[in-house]
Length: 343
Image 1 (spheres, rainbow, N blue to C red):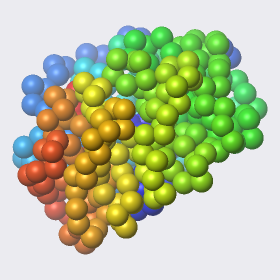
Image 2: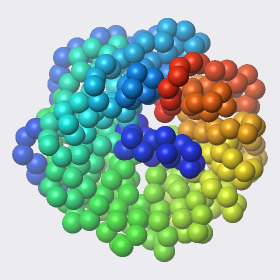
Image 3: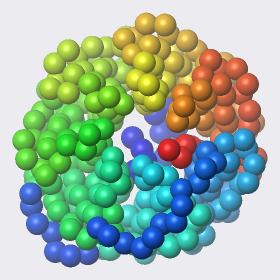
């Protein structure tokens, strides 16, 4: 995922930022059948370094998928739920790996001595976008799901990162520092037509497409604190949805596109909130003195997984979409977080 939080969650995910010759501008083995049981993948450092785990959506069947001596983070499910892409440091630097949903077949796709971060599957599962500094500065690349066909899409002397595919796979939004501050850009999937969408005096980052592709939510510092904005895909109609002096971040569209879950510190500590897609109907879902955040919707929109340190360390919790039924799913002495539901 691979996934762009409140201060507490940002500290937790510092570790999780996140081939052939490249050019500017697959096939593979059988992945096996997709699981019929909803699962939640997450990362945990309970064994000393961050590894990827999975648990059934009812809290049963917790299973460790990676078992390396380095950090494995930034996980993201393939659209069909059969594979997981992630960033691994097992080779001494961060590389993009892919594995089957049961943890088998772990394969280094990027294979380069520089940092490769933030994998993002195309909607059809055939390609993976990511950021890399292999050409001297951070740029957005794309490759086939088997690691072939590597292409530098942005080809710019400043930092470009954080790619996210449009639902139809025709465009990619990303963050760029080419205008002296961070802005949200969009380009065609082949790298053409790169356009600054936000064009503001403050940093804009972490863009997320709505499920129907009609809007883009993003974080902005233009108001001197993090707020959640939404805009049309051409950059018009930029609207501050949260408009609060506290820290609001990490927007997550509901599967039907009618609601946005997010993290906020407006009540003195990090909590999970939800609002309608136009900013109305603001509701606080979690309410405790600890830090709650990084919420992820279930595929049917009925539940949210999130991370909380209400029990002394970060664990994965699940609740109903109205905030009821908050249940602890993990119970380890380490930090568990970054939950992502299988499709």
